[in-house]
Length: 377
Ligand SMILES: NC(=O)c1ccc[n+]([C@@H]2O[C@H](COP(=O)([O-])OP(=O)(O)OC[C@H]3O[C@@H](n4cnc5c(N)ncnc54)[C@H](O)[C@@H]3O)[C@@H](O)[C@H]2O)c1
Ligand SMILES: [Zn+2]
Image (cartoon, rainbow, N blue to C red; front, side, top):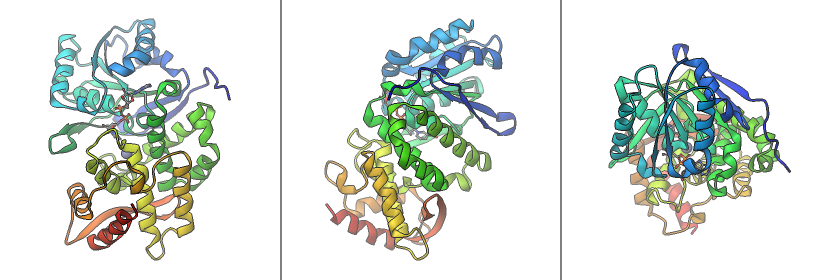
């Protein structure tokens, strides 16, 4: 199938009162970046933060779009990868923003995946006590998840995302054509988060994904539709619970098991975040299916089948390298989650498309389940 060069953008509104913003989604929408910024903040100057891989594919296009609208630009290019979510790189970015005389009223532009969105968003949150910023997500994960909702952070020696701030962008421009250059493995990992939205809240969308996933990967119109549905779902959840005191936790479906697996594999390239989440969701589904009145086993199996069909790992034994012991997994889960009197909180699935927060999961039950799963190797 040949993909269209450009289509009408879809616009999703994130309604957060004075912190409301639009997410503009479509092939080629990056060309409108400058005009949109000039419309929102006439006369504002911009500071683009990107990584050295994204710079090769998308920086020229972004800067051309800004200049065409008469928007002045500066830039910082940081090394690609998670290690850039550090104090050292944050300092470099903040100092460069200040050196470029970016003032209140000017804008930071995060051009990249979740790493750049988190880093540039946090820099924007702290320089001059808060600058506005625009997200231009260039990975599938960033387009459907990290660029929306205002969570920004860098990593601590104690764990990921421990130093950060809630800081909403003023605009998100998600050009689905930028995903054409994303390595297939990165795209697939991002797809795990797409499937997550179906599993947690939208059975119809999940069924649509089962039928249309190939066109999403191929860059057809299904891709934009999928990104728009996910952004709408995330916007709805963030509108209900901006600071994650309740419902926003549903977005963590598969993430308790997933984070423990990521940590066990040392946050390395052997297991990408989305891959860990695919295994984590499969585990959460299977764990749910064993409980009375929750997702029927055949439905859980159907969901896992879809994840496997797109090429995602779904079992711990699918992950290359040595698996952790059950004690190590339980320690990692306890670090990620508060354990209260031996009880853990998990996102469980009642039916495909209906997840809920269960605060009363016995640690012993999780341990028995994981012992069994780890023995499958
Ligand atoms: N703030 C949030 O709500 C939130 C939510 C989920 C994840 N995150 C964070 O997001 C990060 C992961 O994001 P990610 O998966 O996008 O990783 P990433 O930003 O590291 O991008 C993955 C790789 O793809 C490359 N890349 C990006 N765009 C490309 C393109 N268009 N073409 C070719 N290569 C491209 C990058 O250079 C990088 O090497 C993690 O740090 C995670 O903590 C944040
Ligand atoms: Zn995730």
